[in-house]
Image (cartoon, rainbow, N blue to C red; front, side):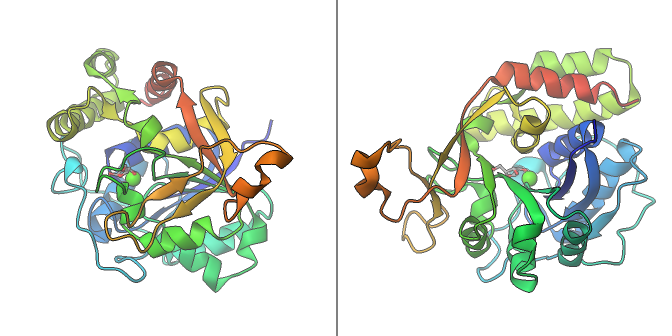
Length: 318
Ligand code: BDR
Ligand code: CA
């Protein structure tokens, strides 16, 4: 069977690292692009290169992109990932460099070369995706779909309404959700309870594999910040949840409905307003006003099975 083609647009980030390593094992990872978000562009790029070296993914190009959001001011770094954006393990400085191409050009050219096949996975702020869609309008028809980690059907984390990746570039997210490209969204309602606990981290260490030991150190740091900041019980694996359904389709359940980005609310800017009224049939047509379905939004997950599947994949790295 041919492997599904994917480009990951990310801001590593502990959970971004896991998403990249998971995708590389199961899919045709055509490239990684790095954006501002969890840390400065310089650090997310460094952390992306570290991830590729950890996974011995020498064939996967990395293109760096935008250091700032489209229109708004930066919301600052994601402190849960530490000062470097990837605190917790001692890792060598990467020996590789990003390729010359800008992330936006890389995304457009990769989609042009694989028309109808490419899955684009933004797991950080969506600055590049919005820019690429503006710069090359045909991109919309070239992409198979966009799978997003971002937003929430319930509460946010950056504010009570807004999740970090959406809050990091609200106008970009608006452009993506209004673009007409087939969308999938996995938000905090799923991802904040999906991740690695202390037992999982112990299993990584017990494997005796060098890569798993590094990942265990990283996850221990990240579990600590998630517990301290949000009272969570797991090192939240937000980002890989956007990738897993291409490999294990029965672990996450989606609802096809309307998801719109709030850009103007005084208290709710950056909210993903998800229509969960489940309107059905002709009788409910009036409920459809301005809520035509534009997105498959994740509403349920088998979180433990998902974490097990991801852990098993990580343990394939030496
Ligand atoms: C998102 O924010 C980042 O800290 C994570 O990497 C994830 O993409 C969760 O809100
Ligand atoms: Ca991320």
